[in-house]
Amino acid sequence: MTADLEASRTHLGEHVMDNQDKRHKGDQKVSYTLFLSLKPTLKAVQWYLILEGFGCNLFCETNLNVGWIFLQLLTLQSFRLLEELERGEKGIGDGTVSYGMDDADDIYMQSWTGTIIGPPNTVHEGCIYQLKLFCGKDYPDNPPSVRFQTRINMTCVNQETGVVEPSLFPMLANWQREYTMEDILTQLKKEMMSPQNRKLAQPPEGV
Image 1 (spheres, one colour):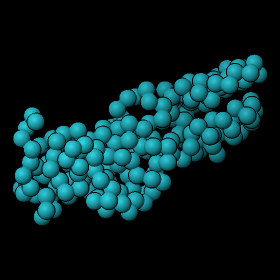
Image 2 (cartoon, one colour; image 1 turned 45 degrees about the horizontal axis):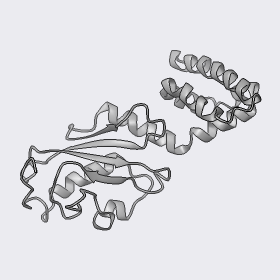
Image 3 (cartoon, helix red, strand yellow; image 1 turned 30 degrees about the horizontal axis):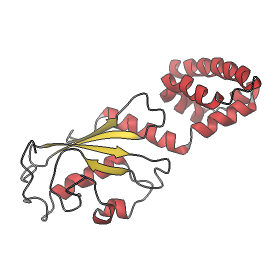
């Protein structure tokens, strides 16, 4: 077991006992407190749970109810978003597409910022586009909402709001749960190179 995993085991044990005591006193916020307590070692916890069979042996030795609350909190969505966060932090391809969390303290990991550097030989060349992605509680079963913060003229983007219209963007319209935020950004970059978008007149800078 690595040092990170060993540290996580100790950290988990300490906070399970803390929250076990609170639960006996009728504190209904035990799950929220538990999640916050574990946040600093979430990356290590993720692998610990996989290697140790979701930590059931540890939690059963202390308090089964607390263990069940923890398993409910670290849902498949949480694991998926942790994986996407880790990939985003490592960097993607040639660096022309990137993304990360808006707020490191967002325990639900819902709000993200994406960046696309406009592809060469298009009107978007050299432009840096900022986007907001919001992953609801049903992600990845349903797609995130996607909105350009930087003004852009594209056939799939609402000119008033900057929202990427699902009905006009096939990846969102035909969403599959294995798709990722990286896939969305990469596909939007490809859309910039499409015949209908590559030469489309763009809004003046700073407007």
